[in-house]
Length: 309
View 1: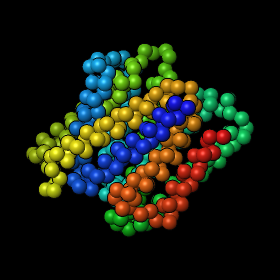
View 2: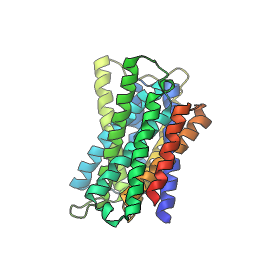
View 3: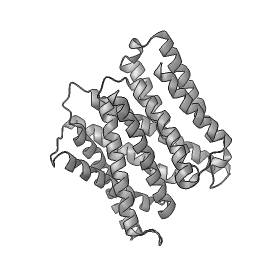
View 4: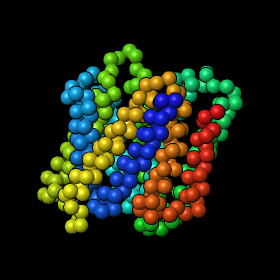
């Protein structure tokens, strides 16, 4: 029961961190340099927080370091794509693809490579297969809805929107798989959870900072804040994001290290995140989902219950 409460808290914090990202994009734009500024600061801030939580000590092993590099690169990729997608439509759609990728790919990994299928009854396996099909169908509705792409209704832009959503889907899927691999590894030495959160976020900040440095040299100028977006707003957004992101990820790692099957953990995260993010979009940004997008959200949420049988 304790690990299920961990997941519930992680879902709430995840919805809040996505809301902070949307707030930043809305008030400071979605350009590559302003996005890199945000990911650089938030990566280092999250790392610093967990370095303090860990008593200013750090563990590093080769296996954990390699996993952290992979996760950091993927997280940076879908974060930057997310800022672009926020400017193109409803941010609940981004969350749906992000979370469905983070669920479906590790579910299949757990099913075929971790032996989850061996402990499932025929009824449970059948329900989860139906759930997978429903989740795949749920992704089609936002893609078909032209209202979700507010920037343009042109064919070229809609194709770009779909491609970016699919990239986010696969990136977060592999993040979840790498996280699970790290948590269950028994042959190679691994670090504690706090150190791993520090490593992934600090490396993310380093990647972002290096890319920002190169762009600054190329463009002969650094990122600039929007006139109405004050420095204190940037600091506040970074700190809130760092706390929500770091604690949420830590809770997910604790659940992944438990005996809870991957085929149960990630569907629960997905269903809760899809619903809470859509609710946050409505409450904080007055985003109303169209009928097609709402059908997709309801299907995604309902399908997750099939994984609990």
